[in-house]
Length: 311
Image (cartoon, rainbow, N blue to C red; front, side):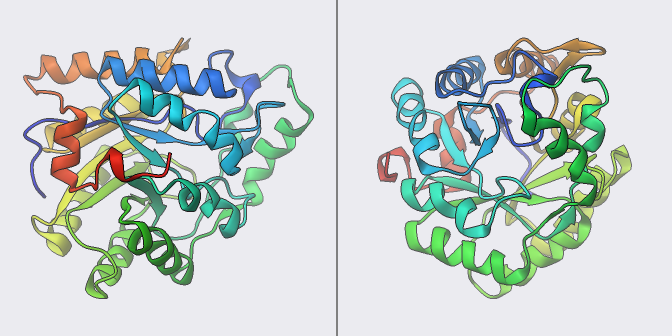
């Protein structure tokens, strides 16, 4: 791994797991998503990992129209790297998940490195009243749902987004086997280093939230990629800040945001994504670590630059 000289903070403002009934602070409209992303960048996030929502009822949306309602506003207001999800949600087809990436040709896209059971049904345990008809079935139905990316899907994303537009990837690895899948595609020369490996912990169906798993993932990644990768990590729910801190202590980078956890402390909802970024930044700076700017993140990850996107 290339130890981080300056730590890149990624913020994921909304995602596709949490629903409006879980927190009044979850951004769902274009105005809310734009405001949340801009605030997070101002607080120190160099990368913004973005999903879209249907503003009518807050459900996850892959629509280029919905992405287009906030992407230009974020770009105009901040220099942060904009990262468009190709994961979407397990209810979306691959064509749907690629719609925004193909339309907007961003510097960076997320790419799930394999299929997994993606069970977030437990996230509904604290909800006493559902605000929209779709929410309860969507959350409880996660028990029987697979987030699907097989090797054919992964290759298609690499070719149709990466090779076609010069977009690079945040390789989301939910288990150790996903590192070996990434190594396979690196050997095929479909992708070039440095590889941004985002370790994802604590999703029921993926690698568990045991701190030893972070060190294990780094050890295996070191053996597969040497100095050809940049590591980052996050964990779902209450494990968010401890796992980000451990990633930084190992020489890696961090990701926070309401996509990954709705909370800022035990039992306390985060009032904004910027609050999480600010708290994480404070931890990093207390450890004597410097925070990477968007320009420094672009240089480290060899991104094409904000002037080469289609929004």
